[in-house]
Structures are given as structure tokens and as C-alpha cells.
Image (tube, rainbow, N blue to C red; front, side, top):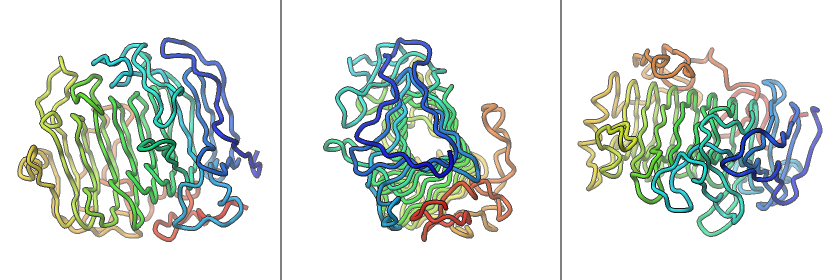
Length: 411
């Protein structure tokens, strides 16, 4: 119930791992609207194991908050991060880069181990697997390095299926990625990622899905806004990643790394987007990332761009394998794209005159019924479009008008 606070102690498991070939649901963890769950250090985190579910459904006026002990005590600041682990959802949907070395995923024996652990596994052959529901949720001050090069994110998805429901989720000040998706088939809507110190949204190992309405705003620290891989080893492992991203606004902080990087053979389509940054907007690496469509390789073809407005000092990164000229050709092959534009975003992420002037790609629903047809680019049409307000928290670098500071808890 609202106002109740729970403490995580170490790794808290929802059920036990039922394996990639299991069916049905064993345990469901239900968290009521307004509940606060906190961790005291980086080894405190929540894991929903395969064959189990989470039911964390808040409301627009009473979101569920996962946060740190420091935030509960009132000592967290707008630069705090890495104060507890994070939330991990695992499922039985297809992934690539199997532990056993098979080149093709999509079967029950294809599984991986969660980064930094030795016994937490995910993946399987059930594309429609259901790991539960998370709606109207905040995840604050998370992220922790469990082992060298292996970190927890704000929200980690491993092999979660299309039966999983994720919408209206804010991840604030993760010391690593905001959201990282390892394979699976989960679709997502209404995501807000603020202050991630590594990538805001990171997808890899064969993830296929549809994502709509994404706001990502960096602080003065942060790596890429989007980092996109298909596989971690052989880039032609299947399933290959294929994500369709619509209505996104990505606000960079001026780091030298590109705002968006595609590599590792990933397939991606970008619709109705806004990308801003002070250095580089778009980087595409690797011949496999731009190769022609081939159904035998589960290859959807080169990246696709429609109605994307970019405003960075340099639009395209020049690499030896995929040159800036080649990336520009891909970008220009789409419709209504703008490279080298000028950002007129208001209040950090709300469309201004230049963004409003871009004609939207109008065929979203023909791509997937999951998409909502829109007549505008970006995640936020104008000042009257306030889908993000009320259930999010505000910070000095990204205020959503919610009247609730990330550094404090709701009364």
C-alpha cells in the first residue's frame, strides 16, 4: 500500500530458475502502488527468475519507486548514482550467443548467465514468454559492478518475452546503463531515462521488439544515448537483433562518443526521432551492420531512418569500415530526415519549431499494431503533451513538472 517501505537484503530472488524449457508460472511478486523498495549497497538487487513474474503496477499519481537507502534518508543528490544494484527481469524468450557455443539461438538450450553472476540464467525458445508487468515505476540511483566489466543496470532484461508488459518506466541516475536488453521479444512504451552514466538504452544479443515514446536525457556524464549490438561474438549469430524504435527524443551532453552507435551486425529502424548532441550524432560500425537483407541469415538489411531530425556538431562518424559518406547515404535513403539541423527543443525535451516542422512518418501501424499512429516526431509533441508528468521525478537537468524531486520521496 502507499507509504510502505521495504528493504532489499542482498540478491532477492523471485522464485527459482525454472529453466529455458519450462512452462507456466511459479511465483508472482506483487508490489502495490506507492510502495518504496530500497537497497543499501550495490549487492542489494531484485531478480525475477525464469518461470516467475513481477506485478509492479503503480499509477500516474502513485508510482512504485525502487531506490537507495541514501534516497530514503534524504542524502541523495542530483549527482548520486550506484547506491544499490537494480531490477533484473529474466525470461525464456530467444537470445543469441549461447553458453554452449551454438551459433543459432531460439531454442530451449540457448541460455546465458547474467553479467557478474555465476548462477543466474536466461533465455529459451518461448518468444511469447511472460515475466510480468511493470507500469508507472521509477528506478533511482542504481547500477553496480558485480565483477570486472559486468555491471547491473537500472533495469536489466534478459530473454524476456512479448508477454511481458513494460510501460511508463523512469530510470534515474544509473551508474551504468539506464535500461539494457539482452535478447528476448519484449515491447516497451513510455520510457524516461535520465542521468545514466553509461548508455541510456542498450540492446544486444538478438533482441527483437518495438519501442515507442522514449525520452533520454544525459547529465554532464554519460556515454552513448543508444548503444546497439546484435551479438557479442560472431556478428552473424542468430537471432539477429531487429528493433523498431519510434517517437524518441535523445538529448546528449557533449561527450566525444556518438549519441547513437550501431554495430555488431544489428538491424534497427528509426521512426519519428530527435537526436541532439554537441559532438557526434550517428555511428554505424561493421560490414555486417549494413549488409543486404537475407532471410537465411535472419538479416533484415541495413539501418532504416524515416523522419529523424539530428542536431550535432558532426552528423556522421567516419570509420574505415563504414564511412561517414556511406552512413549519410543510408540516412538520406529514408524520408523526411534532417542531418545538421538546429535544435529548438524547449524545456530540454519538448518539440520546438524546427522539430514540429518535420513531417512525421505516418505508417507506424502498418509496421506493428503495437505502435500508435502519430502526426509528429519526437517523444513529446508540444507543451500540451504531458504523458511523462506526475509519475516521474524531477532533477536539476531534467524537470518533468511532476512536483516531486528525485532527491526526495513522495509525502
